[in-house]
Amino acid sequence: MKRASDIVVRGIVALGPRFLPFADVATRELPLGRLFRLSLFQVSVGMAVVLLNGTLNRVMIVELGVASWLVALMVSIPLVFAPLRALIGHRSDNHRSFLGWRRVPYIWMGTLLQFGGLAIMPFALLILSGDTHGPVVIGHIAAALAFLLVGAGLHTVQTAGLALATDLAPAENRPRVVAFLYVMLLLGMVASALVFGLLLSNFSQIKLIQVIQGAAVVTMLLNLVALWKQEARNPQHTAHHLPRVALRDAWRQMSRTPGTIRLLIVVGLGTAAFSMQDILLEPYGGEILGLSVGATTMLTALLASGSLCGFALAANVLSRGHDPYRLAANGALVGVAAFCAVIFASPLESSALFRTGAALIGFGGGLFAVGTLIAAMAIADRHPVGLVIGAWGGVQATAAGLAIASGGAIRDGVAALSAKGALGPAFADPATAYSVVYHIEIALLFATLIAIGPLIRLSNIARFHSQSKFGLAELPT
Image 1 (cartoon, rainbow, N blue to C red):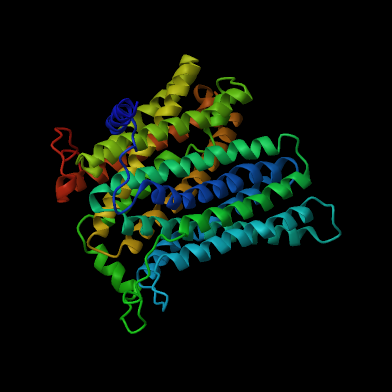
Image 2 (tube, rainbow, N blue to C red):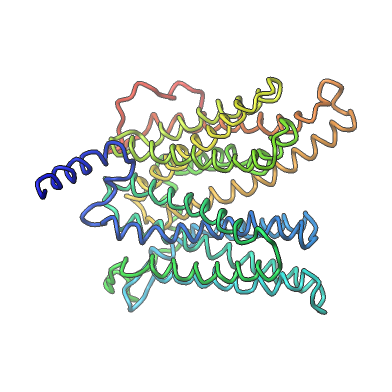
């Protein structure tokens, strides 16, 4: 019996790395249990994103009657903190402490900010609901403060957490670790959306307050478990007598590295291209293709499934030495095909083509995100990792927020002109407004490919060198 059991175990071990994308992500330095615990900070970040951009967004507009423009302004408030991610990463690189920790203090402070924002939120919603005698403007101010605190917290936690994961993971295994962390982020978002939807199926203000309070407690617990015994104390690295490099000097030194600024430009262009449709895809399916609410809700699952496939593929090919710049370029090419499918779904009246396009958007976006982050980590081998990861995350978050806001504004503006007949009878179709946004996204993806071409040609990252014949060096620069 024991012999048969050993054979089965050996078979599973041999089968795992081949068919399970993250079966061999663990190493002696970073065992699977420790990596899984560390990844819980991504789950808390995903929960906060779903709560701010999904649940509270809808509740404040529909149930509480808050003006849409005001809710949009509050949702965009966390973006104010996004450009500071580079500063957070730099400060964590140069943190001075007698305790010997660099990343832990920032993850802990970010957790407290998240908890504080979620603690304030229920009281702000009580005032906004009109069940109190206080002025409504106090509720607006409190809600804005809560959104700002949660946004600042999640940006701080994610920046320091990714830097800590980079510190702990061996260089050759970082691609799989990064992909695994982003899978956990995605799973956290999906699970949180399902749980919030189930708990608020019979909506009441008391239930909403309980859900937000529960999210605050769960955030604290998840991040505490994620932090537990992860970063080794090393007072020699955080001694107060050590010189502290100024952010300006560190940024100047990093920007002199060939390809760094171009990589950040690529991240901004590509992220904007994949993000502009975030709030338009479901309305497009409902208004133009006549899909039901349930059918459009499934688009989230399609996007998530596509992203998961992208992360898994990225982890697999990068661990075998594929160039991350080529991977990001392939993601952009997939995005071009995806948006073409979405555009042609309207004249062809094909919901299947539309769903295929949605899944491909997630797939291409996953390849692009992981590819650019691994390229940034390669730069971090020569510069402070916190600064590099913070710069990547700051550019990505800022570009995504601006793109989402621009996509909605462009769609509304074109729709108004189309309704008035200002664009002529050929563009009077309601799909025109959506199509304009999707065409802009395709143009941004081509701009991304143009920007990334020299990076592929100049790439000198030995462990990521690819023998693939596919290249973009011939594109104009």
